Image (cartoon, rainbow, N blue to C red; front, side, top):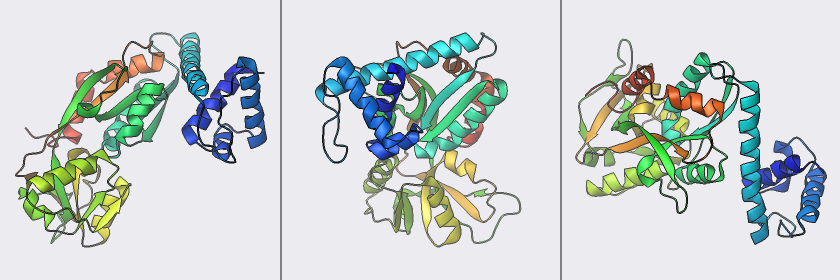
Length: 315
């Protein structure tokens, strides 16, 4: 039995919560995955997977094996990167994830990091805040970009690198397209915005919780015209129809070339949300993660954040 491979299959099953999808992600057949997990149970002398026609979860012992598997796989990746890299030329994968509305920032970061260090292979994932927390806890994510104010997990110590204080804009179609790029208009109140047909993220997203609270504080009911879990849908719906949306500066910056749109800063109340990079503290960093942490603390990256998030380069 290949212990490391079997541990990888167990982690995949935990992530996908489906035997077929886990097998597909590991590029093996479902019977091969099942046989490897049974061999793992024989090796440790415990039942790992609850028996049922479909995946229903892991046993208590299985959860303990899973935690060890996650640490083993990460330690293996760290070791491989140390063997294949030197200080100035890191090589290896770097799994990064962001809440959907911060994906433009993380995508820019990944591209610039790869330009500086071509040996790093960044993986950029979009996740809900809850999934980010799970990923940090399980070490399946090396670096997360999200809402630092909510990242408090029992027994897990995180280290954060603040990036920006997010400001929010009403995005809508302009009456007349601008000559060059998206226009930043005059401020609008949340109460005024709440009376418009809005396309908002679904209620399982933390961004939606921020929107709902802001609208309630402004004294208007929360009644979106469209809900979606895709930030791309937010902008496409505004471009294609009569709805508006509420987006943070990072998302507005991502659609600056859309001349037919305009963004109005939202006021009353003044809503400000801290965004930052996070890692699990006290865990040995890989060469790729060390390089990423060094880059995110440079003046070059700080200027990118200033121009492409928050107030979009303003004060």
